[in-house]
Length: 140
Length: 137
Image: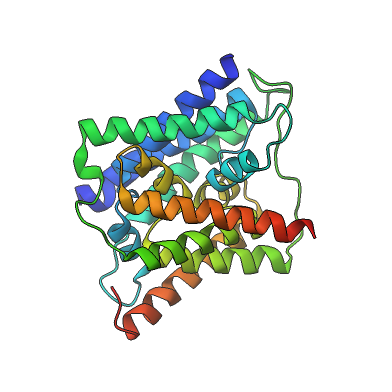
């Protein structure tokens, strides 16, 4: 109950607060793939807020690892080739599809964007299908 | 300067939210996608909590003409459904399920010095660069 409902709700609310703050203060959508992908493009004058947001994410991770180490897995869940394949697909797919879990799944749905609702249903469906396929092939 | 400080603070809060909610545990994320096995509903509550808050905040914030620390709102204005959107989301979903990481939790986990997240994030950046290169042609 605590791990599957209350903490997810509390964490989700914090994510909503952070995303709303980015909108209210910076006028930006808090979509991680968009922020990171945009930083790679080095657009003029548009880089610093992206890098400081990313630095904030990493700092938050560092803080969590000190205060609440149970937030992170103690052992690896995927092999190195699997991690590389997964990362490549996530990088490519989020840029092609203009967003990820945060940009489409939180901000887009929060704005009632039809594009984001469709994208979110699509990546959950393809993810679920992938889990079934990997299990059938003997993975996980 | 202030806009950079606010972006940093928002990043910290975002990361803490991801960590508390369980999204920096790849096994938990894969458990959510495992609808036909031992399904873990956590992500429903994470997205639910975030979306409900953001939905309310969005309506309120849009009442203001401009953001507090920037000259204007920069919001997506596309409404068309195209093949790139669906194909991109489908590709992302496959990668998400293979490792249990999406971009936010992966970058957050870099702060915890996770080797898995480092490999994943490096490959993710490579994937983004591949897209940029191909997309320019």
